Image (cartoon, helix red, strand yellow):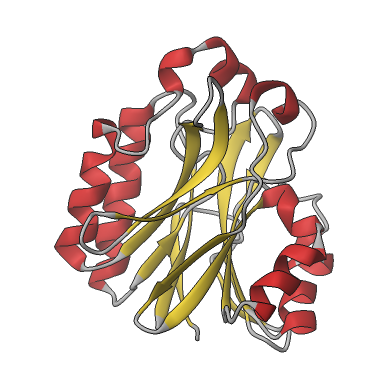
Amino acid sequence: MIVAATQFSPVAGDIDANVRTIAALVRAAGAEGARVVVFSELSLTGYEPSLIRDTPALVLAEDDARLDPVREACRAVGAAAVVNGPVRTEGAGSGITTLVIGPDGSLLARYDKRHLYGVEAEVFAAGTADGRFALDGVRFALATCYDNRFPDLAARAAADGCSVYLASSVLGADNDSFETVYPVRARDFGLYVVLGNVLGANEDGVGTGRAGAWGPDGGRIADAGPEGPGFVLAEVG
């Protein structure tokens, strides 16, 4: 199983532009053999909680037509896309939501971030359920940025038969998660950990890239580096 970990600089509040970038990365990674392509937290809108709070049109539905280019890209290359954005909940609110769009363009899974950080709690509703999906016999777990600070998510993933843990995050250069969170989750629970991260300025600071993956021994097996947009491939499962 080949997974692609991506990084790019979302355009704040421009869903259409970000969808075009996401669809292009899915097509490029799929052409190189990726079966799953992982994106950063709020990749659909940029990490801009205050802008999302003040702009209701930025909240998407699960079947939102604005995601059609991503669905088409998934079908074209036979890859699943793990995308994240503000998505309506059953009530009046929205979550920081991962949508897994399958290789046939259908929705494989939804996961709403369980542990909200800072201003997020004023804008979004916290999720209450773990995120799971399976593809080609490999079972995946979903987590979003601050979620990864809580080892019980990874513990449940391992206990539930997951071998790959997908993290959609927004991390700056001064964030210690690259050393103290992602490799530790991998090593402690015998998981492959795959990180999609952001580049560029956002409401939280400046994203540093370094998307990639860690093996079950905690060692880095893929690193996209801190410079440009794109993706890196990792063999997992």
